[in-house]
Length: 438
Ligand code: FE2
Image 1 (cartoon, helix red, strand yellow):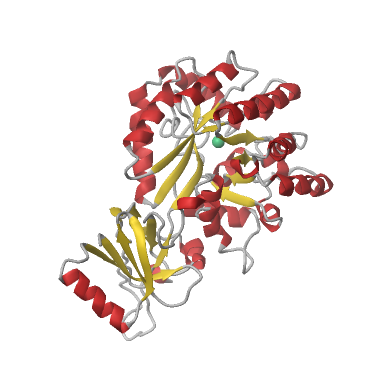
Image 2: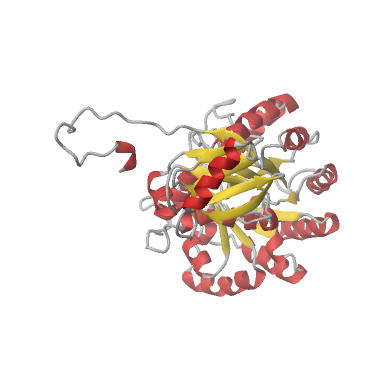
């Protein structure tokens, strides 16, 4: 036995458990009893178990899933200039100025730094979009090589993303197809950014043809605009339904849905349910980017997460950006994204708060179509994290660090939580608590 986690709390179960790992897989999950604790001590003392982690009642979860990030652009904020308007469109312009200076090594170094930062926080499945509107496909080639380089400690999924459009960029469709031949896992589109509505529709038809020809997943930057007339999500859903690709299709952003009339949304929701497509919201970045053209009151640029979940659709979250032309902040912290989603979406009801954690774990695994190997079950790959909290409420409230990160049975990162020494109000006051555990 390579590893045994002792006294861990599990989601939706009472009691404490020990999780044993053998050959990179979860070999057993057993409730801790006085006998099992003695047996665990003995296994470790006699070398039958090589390594043990004392979870001390903390929550053991499957890894966080980053459903949407742009690793090719991370850590370029301010290069060659800062986005002063805070709009998506200025971001795209600045990126097109930075792009000619990309080299494979430049992309590799920045993306690697971001992946290390993510893995340290327990994010072990990462879907990255990569801009393929570049005749040399420099960023794509770099990230394909990096995906292979890091595969022993993080699972990276690459979406070929035509930032400047499929129909509106010279040879856009050819570059997209070439990206799939080179090995991209998923195919993307940006219909609301194409020159015309017809081009947007045409780009989705091309997208589905390519996905079917090369048997790839689909993830579309869809209706990321404060325009209530941007309705490409209905065509995306209709094509997902008609082709049968359904759950292999993801609609990212869909911020225009925030501005649709309720009458249209109620008609749309039936189609979305039939299509079974996934949704990815990016609450941090879209709260920042959207509403920039509004007078007061300014719209919140987030898709209708609450209503989508209530309709039984899958929603997961991304952080989208870490210091790039679109967003000057960002740390890859999935709990920040979830916390923002709960606030902006008015999802603070008793049953809604735990959904924040669901969207950055299992919801993400559904979007990435990796459910087969995901979750805390015997026989599944031993990928899990132990967080510095006891339940999803505490995670959403305090956003604590991830104490231990295990990938394929190996401990790949650990973090000590910050400790506060309190020098006031202690003498004679038995009620004072460590401040970090309010
Ligand atoms: Fe994006």
